[in-house]
Image (tube, rainbow, N blue to C red; front, side, top):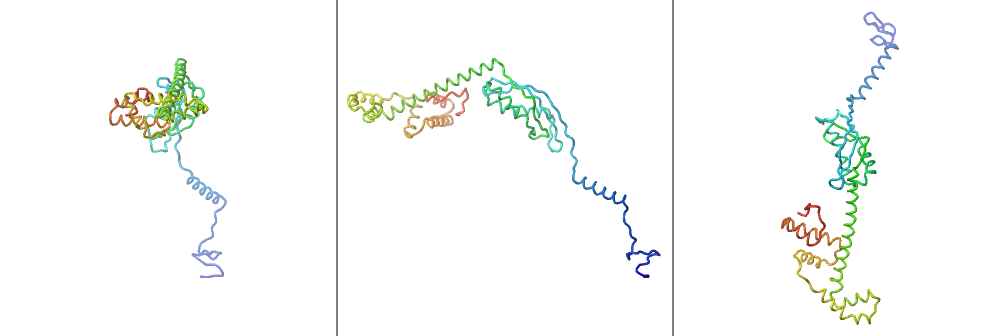
Length: 292
């Protein structure tokens, strides 16, 4: 029943005209509602992460150098932690961490000489300081306090090895130059009298009268150069290819010999390839036979 501007429901009257009573929360109720909303929002923003566990282990090991049998001595402290958020696991995390650090160290040292140990220590320290995940595991590893040292006796051997390499390089360069000069004179200069005479004129200031006087000697040189001793089959094979490709550079001539040796190793066996390499002067391979 309507009376004035209100409604009468169950004996109680709502002054706003709505069929339910007016109700607003007080200050404490509003504060509680705000706190509940804030707590729910924070719970949605953050997820649970298990705490990381950190470990360390001092370790000492030899590391290979570029020369077989001459090693560096390395000492460092391996730090590793377990990332439990990954699905991967490893039964022995300590061994996984140390093995990964040693592997990373070998990749640096196996290309270096012992005489470079001082700068190599800083390079190794920089490389191993970066924390990386061990592949296929939940282990992250790095190393600190890297110290690299060498034995004095091995250091002296490394110096001698370098001297031998330098001497061998110089001698090989001299021999290559001699072979190139001989090949040039035999195959391009002393092929006939006219070519030999023109070459002599060019090298001696175009003294025509003297060249005419030397014609008989030049002709004799051409005859001698045309003589061919009985060649080994390997030399004959190389000569045939080089005759077909006269414009090959010295570097490409060496590549040609290597390719021929490889082919002979595949189709004729290791002994044939070795005989060929010895006859044509291919460099020694330290007991290894990569051509087969």
